[in-house]
Image 1 (cartoon, one colour):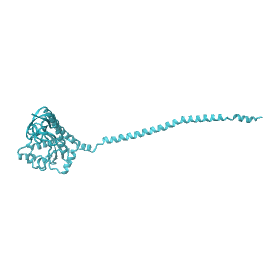
Image 2 (cartoon, rainbow, N blue to C red):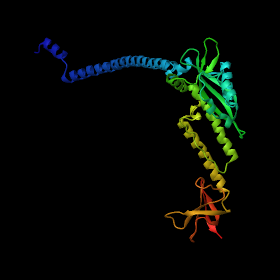
Image 3 (cartoon, rainbow, N blue to C red):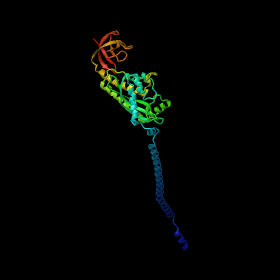
Image 4 (tube, rainbow, N blue to C red):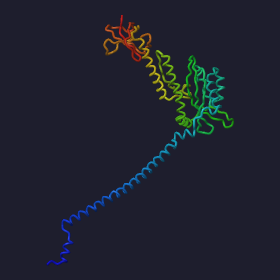
Length: 353
């Protein structure tokens, strides 16, 4: 007979199947716990990262704005120079009066009288008798003086802007002269010092590069462009342009307001480009017409191609009339040429009887 105690113990034992099922249930419960806890952990980590990113963004943006503030609000060296020494329009009427009298004194015919008047306005009276403005200038008008402080007390760099009238020409020419003006500390009078040294010249060159002075020079450039507008309105048949070349020892070489070579070249190119368009337009008016042409000669390496000049063309200066002829032509003889097309400066045609 079985022992009741043994039976009770056997009754309390779990079968293998029941044990496996219990273990599986415990394992599933633990997995669920992990799943419930894991997102909380990830969420906490992500929240910390977001806070760190926001702080970093604020620091970076703040730094950029701070740098930008200093960059925008801190004037450049050039801006500071202009602010400390701005170009002033007609601040000193006495300087404008001196410059007006100085310029117009050169137009006086009598040598002694001219020297007497100019001597009142300059610090060094050079050989003014050799300056010949009066031979081609009729007047100086609308004089305006723009000033900057000079390198020393009571000195000024003056940009005198004016209209220059030329003899036998109705249109005035805009011009600007740079002068060095000094105020006498005893009398308070101002005069033009035309024998300034290298240190003063360097200073004047320096302030001339300031943006406000460059803007003034651009105004003169705009008036120059009005000359081109005048050309387009008049439509000259022929026009030649030459840049001024200062010759050492000549009066013109000593004059104030010399134009930079680069500016002269640009202006010449602008005028010639405008004239080329005008010339091409005028040339089209001769298409279909017959012109009497004097033969210059035959073009080398071109079959039956000749060049000549019509009544419009100056020798070795203006354009040519190009045309073909199977007959041998003699240089210097005249022939009738019917114009068939036109280039920028030259006409092209064919010989007719």
